[in-house]
Amino acid sequence: MAAEAIRAEGNDLYARGRYTQAINKYELYIELVTKEKGGLDRIVCGHSNRAQAYLQLRKYTKALEDVRKALELDPTHLKSLVRKAKALEGLKIYQDVVTIYKSLLQNFKDQLHDVHVKDFLRSLQDAERKDKMTRLGQYEELVDSYWDQPCPNGAPMMEEYVGPVELRRVERMDRGLFATKDLEPGDLLFVSNSIVTVRVPIAKGDIQISVESKSEAMHLVLDSLKRFVNHAFDNLQDFSQFQLLVQVDTLAGPYPTAPLSRDCPSMRYFTPVNALPPGLRNLMRPDLDHPTIRADFSHSTLMKVVERRQFTHWGNDHDELTGIYALPSLMNHSCTPNVTVTTMQNESVTKIFRACKSVKKGEELFYAYHNIFCPLEDRRAFYPTLCCTCARCKLEERLVAEVPALKSLEAQCSKFWEQKSSFSQLSPEERAKRRNQCIICIRLVEELLQKNSKLQILRTHEKDWIRATLIRFHRLLLDPALSLKDDALKEDQLSEMRLIFEAVRAMRTVNPGSDIALAMISEEYSRVVNQNSRKELEPHGLSDLFLTGLEITRLMNGPKLKYRTILKLFNYTSILLCGHQ
Ligand SMILES: [Zn+2]
Image (cartoon, rainbow, N blue to C red; front, side):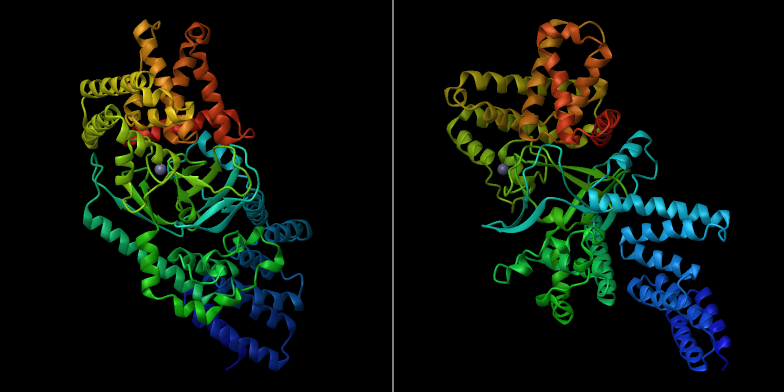
């Protein structure tokens, strides 16, 4: 059969989405035209077409091999140059994508249609944005524009970033993440996308997820993880795919008896390919080469990952999200964390991790896996297998045993909390009643801290730990329907505000980056601003509140973020929390 007929067949198969068969035809075509010595342009065309079919199958290294052959013969073949850019984009090497589009726009100016120019400009900007995220950790612009104008379809997709963190073995808790330099509050640590995410719908007005939905979600997570792993095995020459396998292997651990390189792989396996020096983008780990890693990936490996490493949290629209993350799974929990997380509701549910306290080089990093503004017993109930032994847990364990009044106050607080599940269906009167209970609780803690001899002697931050333990009603305090009226402040309202302020300050000591602490600050802050009465509040010591608000935003966002965004962040977290409870 004539070569051209074979190529036409290939094109036809391609058009019908049968890419693997199309690739076989193009293979034959290339062979024939090479033999026929039928002209360079035909060989170029064969390679370029096959590259396009490989792109469709997301086999980017193969596509790149083909365009390279095409471009060796004809360095100005436009289609091949564009396909090269697409292949590099698939391989996430954005620096090179930028270079290609820049040169296309410059060197092919006269040959390009307007629509191509527009297209290339858009691709160029997109690649530049991704390059800045992965190499420099620049997310401000994107987050800013989203908070400025939230899109109903969710937040924009974000690339990953890995900053000054590394994985190390720790005693007992197997592995943890550590700071590789001194950190200031607000410093970006890393940004992670989920490897897989599944949305579990829940009935409107309900906050419970049925057991069937949960197990269905487990299966869905397992299925997609399997798909990703299989694709990675088929494309091991793509370093990002090899990275994925190493990450999944790491999550199935710990492997205390394995070599350190398997238990705590180099950060190279977690860092976006674009941010790696070219020499590190294609080396495989000698102890985890292809056959070994394949033999290790049994069904039970994946089950271990799905069972142990699931993240669940509320989505935007009456659903619960269940996902698997790499680095976030490897950071340990503390009830006095030094790291804070911002979750962006996009398809990959991006998580942005920042320091929220000063951290010294070499110190371990912790964040809170769950609500930590509640008594020890309840904290332990969230994750019975976790057994947190942070300083706050140890202190509280001792005090609860030594101070019966504290124990009974904690029990009282927990009892209120049990009624919480139907909070969204409560009448305004009932909400007001519970808010009142909450204020009473905060007042009782203050009295206890002042009067009890064992509590009196605690250090300032330890007192805040105890305060933060007994203010789990924060959401009631946040309830906008129950906010103070904008009239002139009465003495009892001022006293209430002072109490809430103490509570918020305690939350800040425990977890300065907490969404809840932020939202509460936001509540108080907007109240102060709305009333335009900073001066009026000054004599009552409440202008501190304003300053605390500013301080927290600085901690949370670093000094570079626009103030406008900080306010958006406040509103955002406040709406998010009120909307769900
Ligand atoms: Zn703890």
